Amino acid sequence: MDMLMRFFQRLKSIPSALAWFIDDVLEGVFRHIPGRLGPFHIGFRLRSWYWRRKCHSFGDNVLIYENVRLYFPQNISIGSNISITDDCIISAHSDPGTGEITLGDDIFIGPGTYIYSSNHDYTTENIKKNPQYTAAPVVLEGNNWIAAKSGILAGVTVGSGSVAAMGAIIVSDVPKNTLVAGVPAKMVKTIEKISNG
Amino acid sequence: MDMLMRFFQRLKSIPSALAWFIDDVLEGVFRHIPGRLGPFHIGFRLRSWYWRRKCHSFGDNVLIYENVRLYFPQNISIGSNISITDDCIISAHSDPGTGEITLGDDIFIGPGTYIYSSNHDYTTENIKKNPQYTAAPVVLEGNNWIAAKSGILAGVTVGSGSVAAMGAIIVSDVPKNTLVAGVPAKMVKTIEKISNG
Amino acid sequence: MDMLMRFFQRLKSIPSALAWFIDDVLEGVFRHIPGRLGPFHIGFRLRSWYWRRKCHSFGDNVLIYENVRLYFPQNISIGSNISITDDCIISAHSDPGTGEITLGDDIFIGPGTYIYSSNHDYTTENIKKNPQYTAAPVVLEGNNWIAAKSGILAGVTVGSGSVAAMGAIIVSDVPKNTLVAGVPAKMVKTIEKISNG
Image (cartoon, rainbow over all chains, first blue to last red; front, side, top):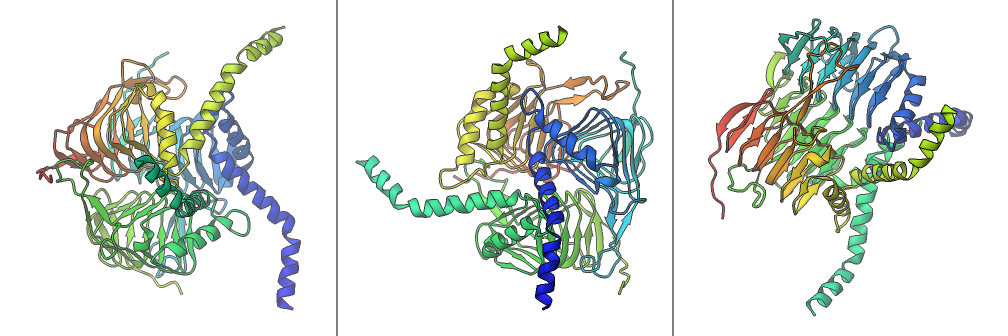
């Protein structure tokens, strides 16, 4: 009787389950198509089409390279003129109104970079059986280069014009026009910007 | 004559070669299926089925995410209630009885984490033409969170309740309930666990 | 009229566009075939065939593992007896005569290692709208082990016999027979090589 009940509940949920399944297959297939595939850049186009519907906002000229994963995209805002290159993870918090991730305009994100706006709360007695999360927004103000293999953690604002060197793990705010490097990332110098027309 | 001999030897080995080939194809295909694919979590199920047969032991509720690679799984023991997330490598030593990797219960392993229980012996004259290896077991006691992009090297024991921050490369033992961070990872603090029911 | 012009120009470029497309599909498909696939190591063979035609030079016994990306391969020279393992990126500069990457003989490159011979010039006013690059050659002299998750930046020469520990980001030259580690990588010790036959 109980089993029959569950069987009917499953039957009722088939259309939405099918939609879910198809959506996941699209994401998984699109994710692995080379970005510049052929002269028409099919990978970039398919992924822009896919993620534009999912993200909170999504600007123009956004190139999402291969194997980029956006988790909880409804909390991710992406400006214009952005490259998010291979193997990146951008993982917002699950709940709206907290832990949003905002990328301004004109940003290069190097391959293998991870941006998280939530963390496990590791003070809980059993971190896996009873997981708790803490969250705080992440903002990249724009005109940034986040070099390969970097990490940006919850609560961080990266000021406009700033740059992270390869492998930097950014755990605190970065002022404008600043180069940071290291684990955890520390300020290396202020960048003197030279106008190039 | 010699060629004929080799041809017949190849013929004899076709069934095992075919089994090897099919096994590799399964692994390669299963590895790239999104874990939560559809409401039935097809990726997680297929990979659990595949790796349960290969690993030395394999508990309940083990979620193997996309593109996780387990090398020499016969020397890898996995407890219950474990998440091994995207792009991780867990590479045990090839020989049984040395260089096992043991994961206890209740563990989160963040994406891009690599755990190795063997190393090249870099004191040999030519590291590639005549490779030699050193090996030592790795143990994660349980109730751990190994954050993204971490590394754990041969011989390390991570005590129960301990946590590695993003990008930590752990080269020596971590006591219980300890937060470590950095390259190489150093102790940041003892974690005060707060019971949450 | 203008549209018609463009339409005819597109028609004329179809054969080269098709060749480009097919080349990209081959690269994308070959890249994801497990290296040791079956007893004939199909992945290694297909990728050797593919990249040998593309690279400036390409020695014998070069094993290219899964998801290795070589950018601007016409500026990449690869010696003999090399393993470039999973998820590596080797990215040369686009222009010939500057920013070449040269790998000598007998080299292990661990998974997730990135080698770049060009950088964004971050002193330009807008790093993304008007990108400028700096470039300098990278040389690995040979008999090296670059452990997992390492990075090697433009202008670096790694001396023969030298080793980078897991997660090292190498930003300056490494003398011969030297172990380096850390972010940025620093010298740990000189390696005493022991002949083993």
